[in-house]
Length: 285
Length: 270
Image (tube, rainbow over the protein chains, first blue to last red):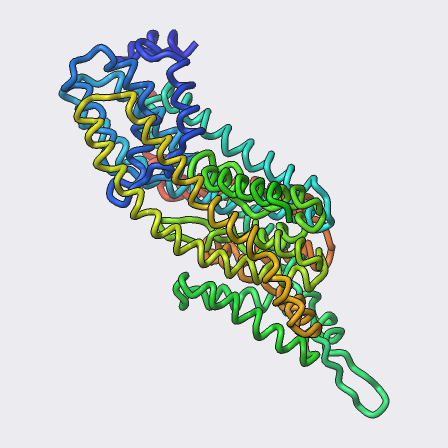
């Protein structure tokens, strides 16, 4: 279908002219099985993994070429690459399209497109997959698992991986088929921004719910005035249920902006220690 | 614990270690922990400890080169300690599991930083392959990398799980009961850490009302996470449509003259 469309448009590019759907499937499996971080180094970071995923494409395009061309193609994909794995599917698809259409002396376009896309797509991938979807799937799963239901991890696995793997695969196919027109039109950026906005909003609403549901701080202290006993916790509940968890979580959030991430572990231990002391004294229950 | 159980847990740790850098299908405490529970014959405890750790480490992920405390070995050890010490899913058991998980996670974090140095030799190797134009050679690097990555977590996990489980037991019995109970109460506060990290990644000025909305839906209306997710999804979509309409109106309002001129032009043409 897309072949005809491309031909009718008189576009310079014809989808699936040299590369086949099979090659793209191989790219997907390489990305899925070997990923990008398995062979990552400190200098080129994920470039080894990127070259590995691109290999089926390079084999098809340069398999018969002379050694020097082949070496140049490989070195091109060993240049610094750092992005997010799920989002890299689309980069691979577009890179394959550009590799197929450019002439040997235009190959700097391949490098430029990779470099231009890895940053923004890493941002999208991190915020949508690593933060939002992972957190939502995790909290849905944790809710079931807390009650001892095996449904928890299963649901989390299906939600997270359905999206994770689906986006990887369709990224490669759509990236290749839509190829250049994808990046050149401004439309794409708008759609992506919309996806980020919606998922951030959902994420934040769920976050608010999680604070109420999972952070447990209850005051055990009671004030005795003559005959009446007033429980501080019931006073607090009268103002707003779960008020302390909300205040505590927001204060931690404020603290994070002053505190480097590497002290996080000390923070966890400090909360454990102070919490234990308060609980032994009976202030917290 | 039998040798077979220890080997199975070590193999699972090795597989999760590979999964963490390549397919990235598991990598979270809730997906890693339950199988350890199954191996040790106590699935319920496995689920509850994993869920606790999942919430505690919720906002934590490897971002921009920062190596986080290792959730995988941490979770596996946390579940193992809770189950083998016989405390199970009681507050004491959860506390012991969380304490073990956090400690081990930091130790393994150091190990992972060192492993990056080891992996550095892939670079000259890949360069050599590229210069020879050897397209099939990359697979060899993958396989060597897989073995390194597998052993990286499988070996330490086996050593700790098989030889040290008894030590944890002795430590636990030496600690007074009310302190263990206090630890349980304190570890119920810990999800706040994971959630607050998540906030640093997501919160921008306009989003505070949304946080409050979610909080109220849960605190007052006591809805579950799934209905809240669905409510918020429809809410977010409607909101984004409204924003789009406002944007379009603003665009139109920004150029009233342009519109008038076009009309006038047309008028003159007619």
